[in-house]
Length: 114
Image (tube, rainbow, N blue to C red):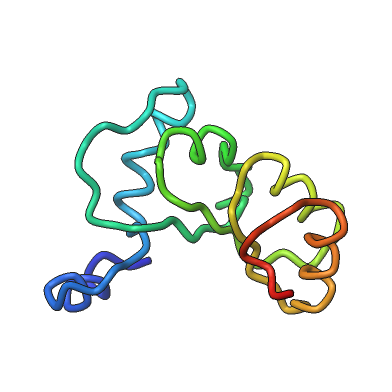
Protein backbone atom coordinates (compact mmCIF):
# COMPACT_ATOMS: atom_id res chain seq x y z
CA UNK A 1 0.00 0.00 0.00
CA UNK A 2 2.99 2.28 0.56
CA UNK A 3 4.34 3.54 -2.77
CA UNK A 4 7.97 3.10 -1.74
CA UNK A 5 7.32 -0.53 -0.80
CA UNK A 6 5.84 -1.29 -4.21
CA UNK A 7 8.70 0.14 -6.31
CA UNK A 8 10.97 -2.91 -6.13
CA UNK A 9 8.14 -5.31 -6.97
CA UNK A 10 7.06 -3.19 -9.93
CA UNK A 11 10.66 -2.82 -11.14
CA UNK A 12 10.88 -6.62 -11.13
CA UNK A 13 7.71 -6.81 -13.24
CA UNK A 14 5.54 -8.25 -10.48
CA UNK A 15 1.84 -7.36 -10.36
CA UNK A 16 0.91 -5.13 -7.43
CA UNK A 17 -2.05 -3.49 -5.77
CA UNK A 18 -2.63 0.26 -5.96
CA UNK A 19 -0.53 2.38 -3.68
CA UNK A 20 -2.16 4.82 -1.28
CA UNK A 21 -1.34 7.83 -3.57
CA UNK A 22 -2.79 6.00 -6.59
CA UNK A 23 -5.96 5.23 -4.68
CA UNK A 24 -6.23 8.85 -3.50
CA UNK A 25 -5.92 10.04 -7.13
CA UNK A 26 -8.72 7.67 -8.08
CA UNK A 27 -11.14 8.97 -5.40
CA UNK A 28 -12.44 12.07 -7.27
CA UNK A 29 -13.21 9.90 -10.29
CA UNK A 30 -14.97 7.40 -8.02
CA UNK A 31 -17.08 10.12 -6.40
CA UNK A 32 -18.14 11.61 -9.75
CA UNK A 33 -18.57 8.28 -11.57
CA UNK A 34 -15.78 8.81 -14.08
CA UNK A 35 -13.99 5.69 -15.31
CA UNK A 36 -10.21 5.89 -15.05
CA UNK A 37 -8.70 5.89 -18.55
CA UNK A 38 -5.11 6.57 -17.50
CA UNK A 39 -2.69 3.65 -17.75
CA UNK A 40 -2.45 1.76 -14.49
CA UNK A 41 0.63 0.19 -13.01
CA UNK A 42 -1.44 -1.73 -10.47
CA UNK A 43 -3.48 -4.86 -11.12
CA UNK A 44 -5.91 -4.66 -8.18
CA UNK A 45 -7.00 -2.54 -5.26
CA UNK A 46 -6.90 -3.75 -1.66
CA UNK A 47 -8.32 -1.22 0.76
CA UNK A 48 -10.23 -0.71 3.97
CA UNK A 49 -13.90 0.23 3.50
CA UNK A 50 -13.35 3.25 5.76
CA UNK A 51 -10.38 5.49 6.36
CA UNK A 52 -9.97 8.02 9.14
CA UNK A 53 -13.64 7.71 10.04
CA UNK A 54 -14.78 8.33 6.44
CA UNK A 55 -16.69 5.71 4.47
CA UNK A 56 -14.95 5.29 1.13
CA UNK A 57 -17.04 5.23 -2.08
CA UNK A 58 -16.60 1.52 -2.81
CA UNK A 59 -19.20 1.29 -5.56
CA UNK A 60 -17.58 4.25 -7.33
CA UNK A 61 -14.08 2.84 -6.86
CA UNK A 62 -15.20 -0.47 -8.36
CA UNK A 63 -16.63 1.33 -11.41
CA UNK A 64 -13.84 3.87 -11.82
CA UNK A 65 -10.87 1.56 -11.33
CA UNK A 66 -11.47 -1.15 -13.90
CA UNK A 67 -9.53 -3.65 -11.75
CA UNK A 68 -10.55 -6.11 -9.01
CA UNK A 69 -11.29 -4.43 -5.68
CA UNK A 70 -10.78 -6.22 -2.35
CA UNK A 71 -11.70 -4.84 1.09
CA UNK A 72 -10.17 -5.67 4.47
CA UNK A 73 -10.65 -6.71 7.23
CA UNK A 74 -14.30 -7.77 7.16
CA UNK A 75 -15.62 -10.36 9.60
CA UNK A 76 -19.30 -9.40 9.74
CA UNK A 77 -21.67 -11.32 7.42
CA UNK A 78 -24.00 -8.37 6.76
CA UNK A 79 -21.08 -6.06 6.06
CA UNK A 80 -19.55 -8.60 3.64
CA UNK A 81 -22.86 -9.00 1.82
CA UNK A 82 -23.13 -5.22 1.48
CA UNK A 83 -19.63 -4.99 -0.05
CA UNK A 84 -20.22 -7.84 -2.49
CA UNK A 85 -23.47 -6.18 -3.56
CA UNK A 86 -21.48 -2.97 -4.10
CA UNK A 87 -19.31 -4.90 -6.54
CA UNK A 88 -16.15 -5.72 -4.62
CA UNK A 89 -14.42 -8.84 -5.83
CA UNK A 90 -12.90 -10.07 -2.61
CA UNK A 91 -13.09 -9.90 1.15
CA UNK A 92 -10.01 -10.22 3.35
CA UNK A 93 -11.14 -11.69 6.65
CA UNK A 94 -10.09 -13.38 9.86
CA UNK A 95 -12.90 -15.91 9.27
CA UNK A 96 -12.46 -17.36 5.77
CA UNK A 97 -14.69 -20.40 6.38
CA UNK A 98 -17.67 -18.18 7.19
CA UNK A 99 -16.99 -15.82 4.28
CA UNK A 100 -16.58 -18.65 1.74
CA UNK A 101 -19.81 -20.24 2.97
CA UNK A 102 -21.65 -16.93 2.83
CA UNK A 103 -20.35 -16.13 -0.65
CA UNK A 104 -21.30 -19.58 -1.92
CA UNK A 105 -24.82 -19.35 -0.49
CA UNK A 106 -25.56 -15.78 -1.62
CA UNK A 107 -23.56 -15.19 -4.78
CA UNK A 108 -22.31 -17.35 -7.61
CA UNK A 109 -18.58 -17.11 -8.14
CA UNK A 110 -16.33 -19.16 -10.39
CA UNK A 111 -13.45 -18.39 -8.02
CA UNK A 112 -14.83 -20.45 -5.14
CA UNK A 113 -13.40 -23.91 -4.55
CA UNK A 114 -15.78 -26.71 -5.44
